[in-house]
Length: 463
Ligand SMILES: Nc1nc2c(ncn2[C@@H]2O[C@H](COP(=O)(O)OP(=O)(O)O)[C@@H](O)[C@H]2O)c(=O)[nH]1
Ligand SMILES: [Mg+2]
Image (cartoon, rainbow, N blue to C red; front, top):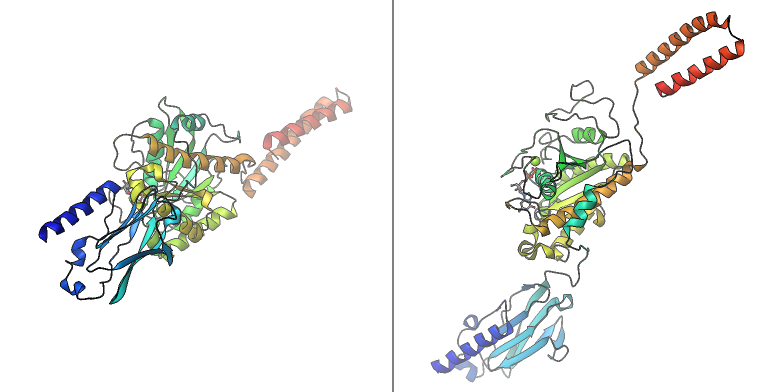
C-alpha cells in the first residue's frame, strides 16, 4: 500500500517537472490520505486551490488530490472546460489526482477557475483566481537602444534662441526619488553612476533643504541644454516640508539658486527673491516625482495630494507643461524587478499609472515609469533607456512651451519714470545743441537728424 502511494507521488512530481510547473498549488499532503470512508461512500472534501499570478507565456497549473473516488470537472468563470478548446489546455485525471494545466499563458486566461468533485455521496468544489502579471503586448514602445537617444538629446537645439537651457523643476513627497532622478539623468550621460544631488539613504524628513540648480554634462564635458532644480520634499503636515508658495515662486522664477527653504515663504524684498525673472529663470516643465510602489499610501494622503494639486494649478495657469515621473518601478512589479524590459507590459505599473493619472489629473502619456540608479555601481543599457525615454519626452514638452515665449522683463514704474526722465533730459540737451547747429544748417536736415535720434533712443530703451 505504502509502495503504491510512493509511486503515485513520484509520478505526480514527474508530471509537474515535465510540465515545467512554476507553481504547484496544492499538493497531496493537504488532502490527507485517502480514507476507508471513501470506500464506504463518503462525499469528497472541498478542493483547496490557490490563486496564481503568472507571467505572460508562463504555465498555469492546478493540481488537487482528492480524498476519495470522484468525477472531476474544471470550469473557468462558470464555463465548463473540456481540455479540447485549446491545445494549450490539458485536463488530466490520474486516479485521485486532478490536473489542469494551461501553457503559454495569455491575458484571456485570467479568471476564476473551479474544480468540482462529485460521487454518489455528494459533491464539493473549490475555486481560485488566475491573474496575469503582464499584458499580451507592450502599451508603450521602446527600441531599447541608448546611443541614438543620447545623441539626439546631446545635440538638442532649443527652438527659442533667447534661452540656452530648459529648466525642469522636480517636486513631490519626501523620499520619492527627486534627487535620485537628477543623479540618474547625469549618470546616463556620464556613463557612470554619479551623485550630484544628495539623495537620502532613509528619508523620513527631507534631506534636500536648498533650492539648487543642476546641470548635466556628457563624457566630453559639454553642458547639455537642460537644467534640473531639486527642491525640498512635500510633507503631510501643514507647515512641514516645502511650502507650496515657495514651489509656485520657483516655477515663476522668483527663487534664487541656493535659497534655503524656511518655515515661512520667500517674500519680495528677501535677498533670495528674484524680482524680475527672465524666461530662462522660469520653469519650463513641472516634474512631479512619485514612488510607484507607495502610490496606494499616497492616494489616501489628502494633504499631500492637495499640495500637489495646488502646485499643478499654478503651473497650469502659466501654461507650463506637467509630467509625472513614477520611480521605484522595481518594487512595483516582481517581473520588472527581475528584468526591466517588462516595464511597458507590466499590469501593476500600468494600473498604478492609471490611478495616479486619475488622482493627480495628469494624462497617461505624461507619466513616465522609471527605475533610478540607487544601488548599482555601474550604468546599464536597460535602466539608461527607460531614463532617456522619460527625458526625451519631457524635453520636447518643455521645448514646445518655450517656443513662442519671449523675455517678459517686468520693469517697475519707477524705472520707466527714470527712462522717460533721461529721454526728456537728453532731448532738451540735443535741442539746445542742434538749435545752435541749426543756424548753420537748413531746418529740414535738423529735423531729420532729430527724428533719427529719437528713433535710436526708443529702440535702445526698448519701448
Ligand atoms: N529601489 C529603488 N530605490 C530608489 C529609487 N529611486 C530612489 N531610490 C532610493 O530612495 C531613497 C530616497 O531617494 P531621494 O532621491 O533622496 O528622494 P527625495 O527625497 O525625493 O530626493 C534613496 O535611498 C534612493 O536610493 C528607485 O527607482 N528604486
Ligand atoms: Mg532630495
